[in-house]
Amino acid sequence: MSISIRSIIIFLFSYTFINLGVIEIFPFLSALKYVSDILIIILFVSILRKKNKYEFNSPILRQLKIILFSLFFLTLLSYFLHHENFFYYLWGLRNLFKYFIFWYACTLFLKKDDFYLFAKISLIALFINTPIMIYQALILNLFGDNVGGLWGTITGVNGYTNIHLVLSNIFALVLLSKKRISYFLTACIILCSCIQAAVAELKFFFIEFVILLSLTFIFSKNKIRLLPIISASIFVLSLGFSLLVFLYNNNENFFTFDSLSSYSEESYASHSAGIDRMTALPLIKTIFLTTIDKFLLGIGLGNAEFTILYTPIFMQKFEFLHIYFFSHGMLFLETGLLGLILYYLFFLLPVPYYYRNRTNEDSQTALVLTFLILTFTFYNQSMRIDSALLVFPFLAFPFISSKRLDTNKK
Image (cartoon, rainbow, N blue to C red):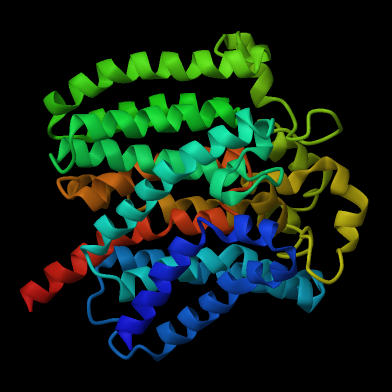
């Protein structure tokens, strides 16, 4: 049973790299975008049926499950308080808990060495994506958000690209520090990432790379091995940014304080009205969460979503604000302050655990990744769509390692 479920998890992770591209090439297969939902349901049923799911249960894992149960009951309380449409609520549950189910399934059914398999899949996709994106940009004359490589050319696919680039570079640096890969391969990964970021106009990735490079160095126990690649990275980053400026000359002064400040205060769709990254929380509180119950519990899970059948009244009125483009804004709006706290607590609570076990590649990866996830939630909606499926396995692997330790103790 566990072997077949493991295969489903591996397939779902791999399928995430091509799902949008396949649907774009074959529009009549649009139903394929719900493959992940079907597989998540199978994983959920398998979790419920697994008899020994509590056999290896570290304290931190129990605490994380308590957080998720608390978040679920909070949304349920909000549902009864606000008398929302049950279909909206179910759709909201799907959008919020789908990726947590995937995470927990990974902790139960994957093996410790699957970390290297998942990292290999991600890095292979990186090298495949690079020539495809160059072709899309230079031959097909596509620009910015429409350059997505395997993910196709639909506007907004760079949310997937951004998470993929961050993951790939964390793998590269962590595995380099553990002497698992060479300097040459690491340099190639960084170079391909900078090329992809440039042709897709993912200028924020250059900031993310500096953050993940700094964090990997700080948390690494083999800092000397990282020093040469840090020096090389400065050169590669300058090449990547030069290509970005060459392709999109309006980014020449992007890394000035005024430009960065202006960028953080732009709405996602800067040509129209919208709530921006930095003001989303205070504006949502002032405009929508005006009572104590709404401030604490939000307007109700699903009430601000786009559903597959029809759109809630809230979105009909306020779609122009583009709140749904930012994960933190939507979470605050629908689940309130308590929901926002519980959501972030899920990611932050294990940080000391990751830090203590950072000699392991999986824990060091999760440690660095956690801080980048916080930027994802403010940067765009990538933690609310299937691009999040790329992230959650790597938050599960440290607990898979702990299962192995518990087995040895017994």
